[in-house]
Image (tube, rainbow, N blue to C red; front, side, top):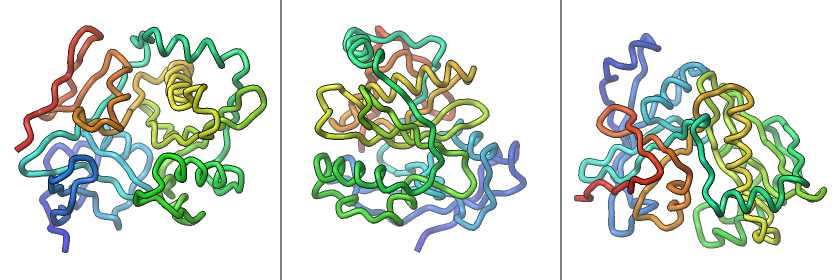
Length: 258
Protein backbone atom coordinates (compact mmCIF):
# COMPACT_ATOMS: atom_id res chain seq x y z
CA UNK A 1 0.00 0.00 0.00
CA UNK A 2 1.24 3.49 -0.80
CA UNK A 3 2.32 5.69 2.07
CA UNK A 4 0.97 9.19 2.48
CA UNK A 5 3.46 12.02 2.62
CA UNK A 6 2.96 15.55 3.86
CA UNK A 7 2.63 18.11 1.11
CA UNK A 8 5.76 20.29 0.94
CA UNK A 9 5.14 23.95 1.75
CA UNK A 10 6.17 25.00 -1.76
CA UNK A 11 2.98 23.53 -3.21
CA UNK A 12 0.84 25.98 -1.27
CA UNK A 13 1.93 28.65 -3.74
CA UNK A 14 -0.36 27.12 -6.36
CA UNK A 15 -2.68 24.81 -4.45
CA UNK A 16 -4.55 24.87 -1.18
CA UNK A 17 -3.62 21.24 -0.60
CA UNK A 18 -2.27 18.34 -2.57
CA UNK A 19 -1.95 14.96 -0.95
CA UNK A 20 1.19 13.13 -2.00
CA UNK A 21 1.72 9.39 -1.71
CA UNK A 22 4.84 7.28 -1.85
CA UNK A 23 4.78 3.86 -3.46
CA UNK A 24 6.39 0.75 -2.06
CA UNK A 25 9.77 -0.27 -3.44
CA UNK A 26 9.85 -2.12 -6.74
CA UNK A 27 12.33 -3.02 -9.45
CA UNK A 28 13.78 0.01 -11.20
CA UNK A 29 12.80 0.31 -14.86
CA UNK A 30 16.10 1.95 -15.79
CA UNK A 31 18.86 0.56 -13.61
CA UNK A 32 19.23 -3.22 -13.17
CA UNK A 33 19.58 -4.51 -9.63
CA UNK A 34 18.14 -1.28 -8.21
CA UNK A 35 14.94 -0.64 -6.30
CA UNK A 36 12.80 2.43 -6.86
CA UNK A 37 9.99 4.31 -5.16
CA UNK A 38 7.73 6.98 -6.59
CA UNK A 39 6.08 10.06 -5.12
CA UNK A 40 2.75 10.75 -6.78
CA UNK A 41 -0.12 13.18 -6.46
CA UNK A 42 -3.37 11.82 -5.08
CA UNK A 43 -5.20 10.44 -8.16
CA UNK A 44 -8.45 11.85 -6.75
CA UNK A 45 -7.04 15.41 -6.67
CA UNK A 46 -8.60 17.99 -8.97
CA UNK A 47 -5.87 18.99 -11.43
CA UNK A 48 -5.76 21.37 -14.37
CA UNK A 49 -3.22 22.57 -16.90
CA UNK A 50 -2.04 25.48 -14.76
CA UNK A 51 -1.45 23.32 -11.68
CA UNK A 52 0.37 20.69 -13.70
CA UNK A 53 2.51 23.37 -15.33
CA UNK A 54 3.63 24.40 -11.86
CA UNK A 55 4.26 20.79 -10.82
CA UNK A 56 6.50 20.37 -13.86
CA UNK A 57 8.66 23.21 -12.56
CA UNK A 58 9.10 21.18 -9.37
CA UNK A 59 10.37 18.06 -11.13
CA UNK A 60 7.08 16.19 -11.53
CA UNK A 61 5.84 14.44 -14.67
CA UNK A 62 2.64 12.78 -15.80
CA UNK A 63 1.84 9.33 -17.17
CA UNK A 64 -1.74 9.45 -18.31
CA UNK A 65 -3.59 11.28 -15.54
CA UNK A 66 -1.10 10.24 -12.85
CA UNK A 67 1.42 12.88 -11.77
CA UNK A 68 4.58 11.56 -10.18
CA UNK A 69 8.31 11.87 -9.65
CA UNK A 70 11.00 9.39 -8.57
CA UNK A 71 11.61 9.44 -4.84
CA UNK A 72 14.26 6.83 -4.08
CA UNK A 73 16.11 6.86 -0.77
CA UNK A 74 19.47 5.64 -2.04
CA UNK A 75 19.47 6.99 -5.60
CA UNK A 76 18.89 10.29 -7.38
CA UNK A 77 19.82 9.19 -10.89
CA UNK A 78 16.52 10.28 -12.52
CA UNK A 79 17.11 13.90 -13.47
CA UNK A 80 14.31 16.17 -14.76
CA UNK A 81 15.39 18.09 -17.86
CA UNK A 82 14.16 21.16 -19.65
CA UNK A 83 15.53 23.06 -22.62
CA UNK A 84 15.46 26.87 -22.97
CA UNK A 85 14.22 26.99 -26.56
CA UNK A 86 15.47 30.49 -27.36
CA UNK A 87 19.05 29.41 -26.60
CA UNK A 88 19.01 26.06 -28.38
CA UNK A 89 21.88 25.41 -30.78
CA UNK A 90 21.63 22.23 -32.88
CA UNK A 91 24.72 20.09 -33.24
CA UNK A 92 26.01 18.78 -36.56
CA UNK A 93 23.91 15.62 -36.54
CA UNK A 94 20.75 17.51 -35.63
CA UNK A 95 21.34 19.98 -38.47
CA UNK A 96 21.83 17.06 -40.85
CA UNK A 97 18.59 15.38 -39.75
CA UNK A 98 16.65 18.62 -40.15
CA UNK A 99 18.14 19.38 -43.58
CA UNK A 100 17.26 15.88 -44.82
CA UNK A 101 13.51 16.12 -44.15
CA UNK A 102 12.41 19.67 -43.34
CA UNK A 103 11.66 20.66 -46.95
CA UNK A 104 9.19 17.78 -47.22
CA UNK A 105 7.84 18.00 -43.67
CA UNK A 106 4.18 18.69 -42.95
CA UNK A 107 2.85 18.69 -39.38
CA UNK A 108 -0.84 18.19 -38.67
CA UNK A 109 -2.36 18.92 -35.26
CA UNK A 110 -4.78 16.29 -34.00
CA UNK A 111 -6.75 16.03 -30.75
CA UNK A 112 -5.63 13.60 -28.08
CA UNK A 113 -8.12 10.94 -29.13
CA UNK A 114 -8.05 7.48 -30.64
CA UNK A 115 -7.32 7.15 -34.34
CA UNK A 116 -6.80 3.78 -35.97
CA UNK A 117 -3.82 4.98 -38.02
CA UNK A 118 -2.06 6.25 -34.89
CA UNK A 119 -2.68 3.00 -33.05
CA UNK A 120 -1.35 0.88 -35.90
CA UNK A 121 1.78 3.05 -36.07
CA UNK A 122 2.24 2.70 -32.30
CA UNK A 123 1.91 -1.10 -32.52
CA UNK A 124 4.58 -1.29 -35.24
CA UNK A 125 6.86 0.95 -33.20
CA UNK A 126 6.47 -1.10 -30.01
CA UNK A 127 6.96 -4.37 -31.85
CA UNK A 128 10.18 -3.02 -33.34
CA UNK A 129 11.61 -1.19 -30.33
CA UNK A 130 10.09 -2.74 -27.18
CA UNK A 131 8.78 -6.21 -28.11
CA UNK A 132 9.45 -7.72 -24.68
CA UNK A 133 8.74 -4.68 -22.52
CA UNK A 134 5.79 -3.69 -20.38
CA UNK A 135 4.18 -1.92 -23.36
CA UNK A 136 4.08 -5.04 -25.56
CA UNK A 137 0.66 -6.08 -26.91
CA UNK A 138 -0.93 -2.63 -26.56
CA UNK A 139 -4.65 -1.98 -26.66
CA UNK A 140 -6.44 1.20 -27.80
CA UNK A 141 -7.58 1.83 -24.23
CA UNK A 142 -4.09 1.28 -22.86
CA UNK A 143 -2.59 3.66 -25.38
CA UNK A 144 -4.92 6.49 -24.42
CA UNK A 145 -4.54 5.77 -20.70
CA UNK A 146 -0.78 6.09 -21.15
CA UNK A 147 -0.69 9.25 -23.28
CA UNK A 148 -3.73 11.35 -22.38
CA UNK A 149 -5.54 12.82 -19.40
CA UNK A 150 -8.88 14.51 -18.86
CA UNK A 151 -7.37 17.73 -17.49
CA UNK A 152 -4.30 18.51 -19.63
CA UNK A 153 -4.23 20.20 -23.04
CA UNK A 154 -2.54 17.50 -25.11
CA UNK A 155 -2.13 17.30 -28.87
CA UNK A 156 -0.99 14.55 -31.20
CA UNK A 157 1.28 16.23 -33.75
CA UNK A 158 1.48 14.14 -36.93
CA UNK A 159 4.79 14.50 -38.73
CA UNK A 160 4.55 13.58 -42.38
CA UNK A 161 7.63 13.44 -44.60
CA UNK A 162 7.03 13.32 -48.34
CA UNK A 163 3.36 12.58 -47.72
CA UNK A 164 3.95 9.57 -45.45
CA UNK A 165 3.06 9.45 -41.77
CA UNK A 166 6.45 9.32 -40.10
CA UNK A 167 5.98 10.06 -36.40
CA UNK A 168 3.51 11.16 -33.74
CA UNK A 169 4.83 13.64 -31.19
CA UNK A 170 2.46 13.57 -28.20
CA UNK A 171 2.84 16.97 -26.59
CA UNK A 172 1.31 18.84 -23.64
CA UNK A 173 0.70 22.54 -24.28
CA UNK A 174 1.23 24.48 -21.06
CA UNK A 175 1.36 28.14 -20.02
CA UNK A 176 5.14 28.05 -19.53
CA UNK A 177 6.20 25.65 -22.27
CA UNK A 178 5.65 22.44 -24.16
CA UNK A 179 6.17 19.05 -22.57
CA UNK A 180 7.34 16.19 -24.76
CA UNK A 181 5.19 13.32 -23.50
CA UNK A 182 6.11 10.55 -25.93
CA UNK A 183 7.08 10.08 -29.56
CA UNK A 184 6.56 6.98 -31.66
CA UNK A 185 7.39 6.52 -35.33
CA UNK A 186 7.44 4.24 -38.33
CA UNK A 187 10.38 1.86 -37.79
CA UNK A 188 10.74 1.52 -41.58
CA UNK A 189 11.67 5.22 -41.68
CA UNK A 190 14.37 5.02 -39.02
CA UNK A 191 16.91 6.31 -41.56
CA UNK A 192 15.20 9.70 -41.27
CA UNK A 193 15.87 9.80 -37.49
CA UNK A 194 12.20 10.61 -36.83
CA UNK A 195 12.68 10.88 -33.07
CA UNK A 196 15.28 13.59 -33.56
CA UNK A 197 13.14 15.27 -36.21
CA UNK A 198 10.13 15.35 -33.88
CA UNK A 199 12.08 16.87 -31.02
CA UNK A 200 13.63 19.51 -33.25
CA UNK A 201 10.16 20.42 -34.47
CA UNK A 202 8.86 20.65 -30.89
CA UNK A 203 11.67 23.08 -30.09
CA UNK A 204 10.71 25.24 -33.05
CA UNK A 205 7.03 25.02 -32.15
CA UNK A 206 7.67 26.16 -28.57
CA UNK A 207 9.68 29.08 -29.96
CA UNK A 208 6.89 29.92 -32.42
CA UNK A 209 4.38 29.98 -29.56
CA UNK A 210 6.76 32.20 -27.55
CA UNK A 211 6.99 29.60 -24.80
CA UNK A 212 10.32 29.53 -22.97
CA UNK A 213 10.71 25.82 -22.18
CA UNK A 214 10.52 22.37 -23.70
CA UNK A 215 10.28 19.83 -20.88
CA UNK A 216 12.03 16.57 -21.77
CA UNK A 217 11.05 14.37 -18.84
CA UNK A 218 13.55 12.33 -16.86
CA UNK A 219 17.08 11.51 -17.89
CA UNK A 220 19.21 8.76 -16.38
CA UNK A 221 22.82 9.36 -17.51
CA UNK A 222 23.83 5.71 -17.10
CA UNK A 223 20.79 4.39 -19.01
CA UNK A 224 21.67 3.92 -22.68
CA UNK A 225 18.13 4.23 -24.03
CA UNK A 226 17.79 7.68 -22.45
CA UNK A 227 21.20 9.03 -23.44
CA UNK A 228 19.84 10.95 -26.45
CA UNK A 229 18.32 13.61 -24.21
CA UNK A 230 21.73 15.02 -23.29
CA UNK A 231 22.42 15.78 -26.97
CA UNK A 232 20.18 18.85 -26.88
CA UNK A 233 21.97 21.82 -25.39
CA UNK A 234 21.95 24.00 -23.43
CA UNK A 235 20.01 22.13 -20.77
CA UNK A 236 18.69 22.85 -17.34
CA UNK A 237 18.45 20.09 -14.75
CA UNK A 238 16.35 20.02 -11.60
CA UNK A 239 18.61 19.21 -8.70
CA UNK A 240 18.69 20.09 -5.02
CA UNK A 241 15.36 21.90 -5.29
CA UNK A 242 16.24 24.23 -8.16
CA UNK A 243 16.95 24.40 -11.87
CA UNK A 244 20.63 24.64 -12.76
CA UNK A 245 22.04 25.51 -16.15
CA UNK A 246 24.64 23.67 -18.23
CA UNK A 247 26.14 24.93 -21.45
CA UNK A 248 27.23 22.91 -24.49
CA UNK A 249 30.78 22.43 -23.32
CA UNK A 250 29.92 20.93 -19.94
CA UNK A 251 29.55 17.26 -19.15
CA UNK A 252 26.58 16.34 -17.00
CA UNK A 253 27.61 13.75 -14.46
CA UNK A 254 25.23 11.30 -12.92
CA UNK A 255 24.70 11.60 -9.17
CA UNK A 256 26.29 8.84 -7.16
CA UNK A 257 24.05 5.82 -6.81
CA UNK A 258 23.92 4.22 -3.41
